[in-house]
Image (cartoon, rainbow, N blue to C red; front, side):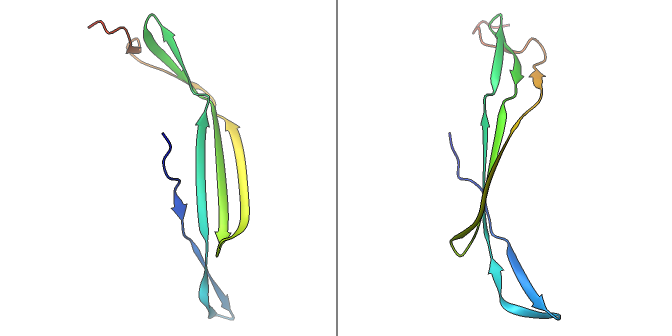
Length: 95
């Protein structure tokens, strides 16, 4: 499932010697986050652990439809989450 990326609309107000120059400069910021490679560990028909993957963020800054910057960065997320109480039972057998 993919959802619409958040869009921010900051603006910059310019001043010279304390006098505002109109209009303010309107910007659009698009942010995209992608999580890839999340793994689950299954033992004895139970999900017992979730391990992290890679997070990629992309930020695009535009002004009046002119692209000012478009940057992407990826990081490997550390760690794992051990699920309590034996994990999530996938067997379909009531406990």
